[in-house]
Amino acid sequence: MLIKTSAAVDSQQRARMHQSIKTLFDAVAALPSAHLSGVTVAPSRFGSNGLFSAPSTASSSVTDNEGNASVARIPASAVLTARKIADWARDHDEPLASALSVLTADAPSSTWSSHVERVVLLAYLLRYTQPDAGVPTLPPHDRAYLDALPGPGAVLTPVSWTEHELEGLLSGLAIPTLVHAKRGRLVKEFAAVAGAFDMPLPATLADFQWVDAVFWTRVLQVPSAAHGTELAMIPILDFANHSFDPTLRWERAENGDIALVPLTSPLAPNTELFISYDMEKSNEELLFAHGFCIRGNARGLVSVPVVHPVQSLASDNPMLAARVQWAVTHAGVKLLLRVVADPATVPPEDRLDALQHMLDTPSLTLALVIALEDERDDLEAIARVDEKAPPPVDPHRLVRYLVDHARAFPDVVDRACEFVATVCSMFISNVMSVRWTPVAEEKDTVQVEARAMGVDPISGEPVVQEVAQFTARRAVVEAAQVYRDQVLETLGRVVERFVDEGDVDS
Image 1 (cartoon, rainbow, N blue to C red):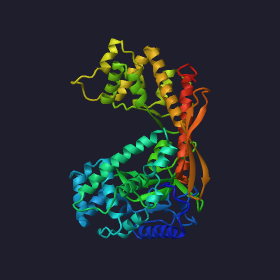
Image 2: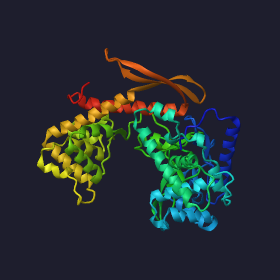
Image 3: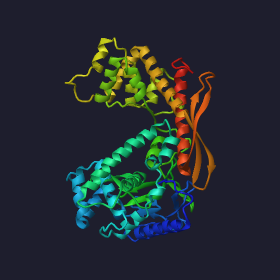
Image 4: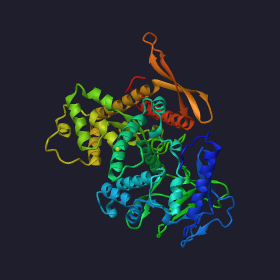
């Protein structure tokens, strides 16, 4: 998976990384049904390792029973899943087995959710990646896989960023809020995982944050004959970086083996092979889960927190406050706007259609609920909070009702558009209130100057109010710059889409 690594890793570290990868290849290749001669791992132009086609493509592919040629086959025994871990623990690691019984509430593995699978994988990673932990000896391929995982300094998801990097580079954006919330969840999860063991674990919260990042940057959802789908960490394949123009796909055979099938033929030697993590992944999702962004990626969503604007609107409007509370409680609405389509790709249709294209269902619901008029008796029931209220409503049914109502009352659409444009405009101003510039660069770090901006009360021109400098890792700065630029560009287009019709002051 594409993880930015330091360009200043010393030669000894590089040698250790190279040796651990070689050991992993040798261990997996020794397993029955393994075929790895068609691929190799080498430095990628993205600053990390990547999966490449072999130097010689001759005799480097195998063909399955259906005639599909694959450049590699990873045996099922090398694929790491929660159920495999549970089986291993039951036979070889009583402390882990006991902890998993607590963490899974003794539920049969056939009923495990993806959340439970993740917790099992995290418990295993936490236990077996600690030095001198006195754990049972793993099979060589499993041990080699854990030893080849990127270290804490190489996994640069925002949860691992310093506060200077997080708040200095992404000030005003949604990611810092998401990171702080996730850090809080990880504190609770670490306490639960560590507390499930009958003995102290030689692990810290930082270790748990690292294994969580390793999990998210490497896990895939794979088909399972017995369970439909399951989460899996797949050695060798997880060196492949992400692209929206993939050259490789993977498939799981009936026996559980993973075949790596090229999407182009013939496959040139020494060519980096890319998979797609998800063809619809936005930069916000890529940055939060994987630690990188792709310039020019207009897919997916941009999140705009609207807690403060909504609170301000509702502070002197009890009916609005009640409507919003009802939507949050019963319809799954969050105080967050998610722009899920680049406004540049939205057809120039009517304003309500534009809102439907740009926003996800909860965001559209929020905008329309806020735009309702209090005095319409037929809508008061929507906002009324009743102790005997029914279970959560169908959000799609609710939004259809609101859209149909808005079509009958154009002023509702006007107010919804005004709300969206206003909060996006406020968000842009908040982000732009801190501007930063790289002022000095070294091999793997950047000296950043951040300027807090204000407005001159006389001239109305922007002025610098405060200047601060901090050091950030180059890969972090690059990812933050791409994400910040995309957010400002996308939301600027949202504002332009409505400001031309007089919704907000320009």
